[in-house]
Amino acid sequence: MSQNTCNRRHALVTGSNSGIGRATVNALVGKGWHVFAGLHHADDAGDAYDENHVTTVTVDVTDEGHLDEAVRVLSQHLGDRGLDALVDNAGVGVAGPLEFVPLARLRTQLEINVTGQVAVTQRFLPLLRKATGRIVFISSIGDRMAMPFAGPLTSSKAALSMIAHSWRQELAPWGIGVTIIAPALVHTEAADKLQRDADEIVKSLPEAGRRLYGTTFSEMIRRAVKQEKGGSPPTAIADAVVRALLARRSPARVVVGKGGRMLSVLAMLPVPLLDALRRRLFRLPAPGSALEAR
Image 1 (cartoon, rainbow, N blue to C red):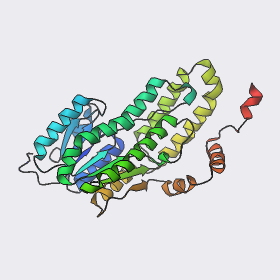
Image 2: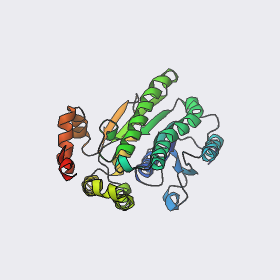
Image 3: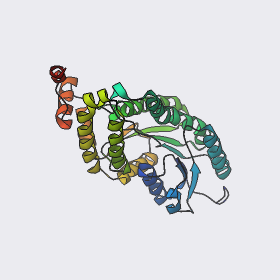
Image 4: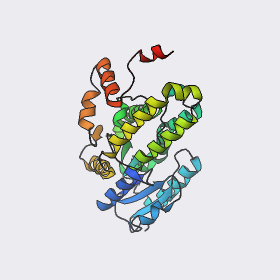
């Protein structure tokens, strides 16, 4: 489909191999958009997409070569029309006791979830400016409420949200709307992956790490996975993305997904009370309880 024959609105969605990204691609196509599905790696994910209205592009947000090629592909298709929407969805999750999280894994977490999102947005802003497009960042309800053993992930989402807030103000003169979508409990393939990764993390901990955190970490992950499996489907988040892109004005922040309203209220509680609730929810040890075991 060339730039001369495609009269649809156009969006680029990163992290489209599965989950929220895949659901967003399909939701936008259903609303009449032509979507560039950014795939982190080559697999069979693109085979099921509507070949008439989806163009797959390889987009590893940490690879400058990938970004250069994606800009070339989109520019060739769009011509002077520009890009109507960018959905920054690509991301990974690193969990574990912060005392033993390998710094290389922490750097990877921040490089993908924060620096990578900035890199993608910088590259495609000229195309977005042509169409007075919109940007959606997929953050998390955790951007305002840190959870134990999720420090790398929640810190990256908090940083991403702050960047989005800054960009919203900086791009306002050009009419480019910026929205943060903050999912709460969502059931994707990531829930099963979290359990598998957690088991490997415990195995990889040094003996001291397993002794200090192994049982508590494993129990919390078990409970977190159970909650995620009872969460909203990825289509619920995809629908929120579509609504944000089609709204008369871009909303600044949208909380979506099961438990979102409750978690938003909890995030405003005094810290001691919130800590107590988290300990109860995840069966975390009480403050000072480990002193007796020394």
